[in-house]
Image 1: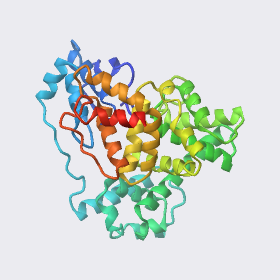
Image 2: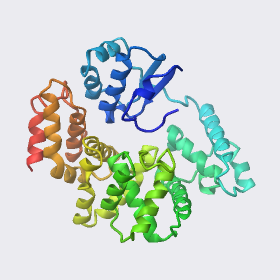
Image 3: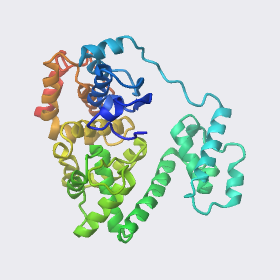
Image 4: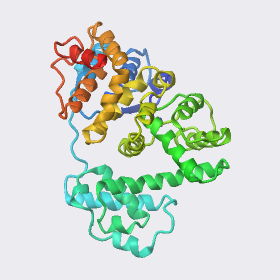
Length: 383
């Protein structure tokens, strides 16, 4: 079973004997990788039966980009349909069962600590989830996690969505402390601030290929003074937790998941930095291309745009595009000149919409060649 970002070498994924299913989540944020996987699948001479599922939040230019990259991929996609996903929980009974099952599963993992029996007993009764959490599967599962830890406010249904996210982040940071302790790093406010900054950099830039790339990113992101051994301790701890292959120097290191949790942490870090324009610019000038050429800058814009869709940090998008607009415009135009839809184009259009305090709908074709599309980017980039 492979989890995380698609590997650079797709052979192990598409070759072999056993049938396999590959699910690419957030396919709209990295259509180039999804296109490469489909191309490898349809062009192989032999191999196991294989299915690929592309999960996305909406159908847009990114799908046309994948389709137009290869005639064989185009034929494959033309034979398929886009299937809207139905809610996982269709009734209150389903949600209650989902909450109970998830809570029981979390409680058996052996890491929930000393949960009071009375709290678990209370949690086993009728759902006390606030109505505004019941229809969101991720919140149902986070609620279940907090209940398994014996969080009485969660059990009583007293937590808002923001409070649920905050408390789950606190639980995540407990894992950081344990990982740092294994590498001889004391739990101090300075270390935890540095760890938050390192985690935020991964969320903004996306997965890095190896420990060397992570070290460069962390050195750029961490602004509190740490000696080299503490820098290594933070890196080693994160490699253990998010590296998928513990102890290897060449394994990728991934951001916190799920995305909503990671973006909440990023918003907190950028919110603190926003008090000082120089500090905010420091974050928006991280070495995107040296860490992950191409995808990292596009991911950063996508993440900032998703935050803006939650009414968080619209000004950060403007600042980011002021600094990186010309580079992004060049990439949009380069792809559009080849007659293809460029996925970052639709994100740029949406970002501009949030700068105007409204969501803007991409033009029909969604390419930089469309009238009113490229001029708006160029105007912004020249600002």
